[in-house]
Length: 294
Image (cartoon, rainbow, N blue to C red; front, side, top):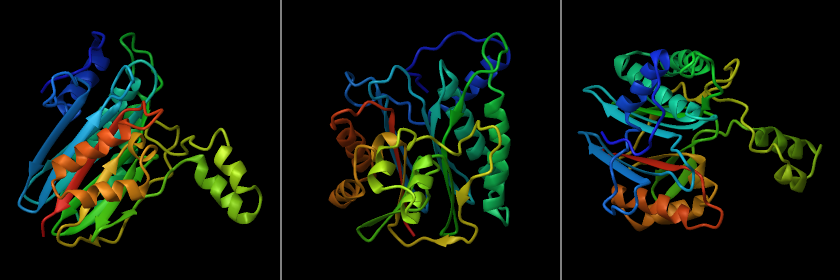
């Protein structure tokens, strides 16, 4: 594994958490083919039933706070994307711990009857761990992360989302978001429907993007997901991404790129690199594509 970002030397519990992050690897930390693009990373793998490819960029930020992890065993495939937030190394540590923790828990419980409950159980435990992230002086630091998780077993999908990272289903040339954004914009849009405020007021509200749920929040009460297994069809593609992608590319633009190529590696790269061409694009941007082969 190659770490692309320098970090302060830590001690004690903080060092253990950082080692956990390095073990997770920001799973996509492999240099891009273009040596001049040191902030671009990619990875891919294939199982009997799935094909997976991902791409991530640091953008113009000083550090990479996204974490992407995917793994599988004989029973299931698990894919997790997290977008960290917080000062110093808090965001990247939070996202890495969450990505590793959710992946490990789901693989260890891959034969469980109620996967949605396992996702919720893992999320609650991870929320407490993120809240307890500390610096080298053993002081708690501000840290948080969004999380999307995809679990595939016997052709059935379970997913969960916390925060504003997205999970899409691409099927037969059409794109549909599966999860909902946990931000204040949801409440503003509801106020528009109720006639309390105008659409323009909702769109321009300064707190529109403020998260209402994330790992690291004081009390985690809002987790979206499906309790009834969602049957996948051959060639379905699941797209998980951080907000660096969808804040630059519309659903139509994303769909056009997925329509243009069936090569997941190429598609993930095109999605990220196209987003980076937009004026004002500066955020970490990560994409993970999972195709169900049937």
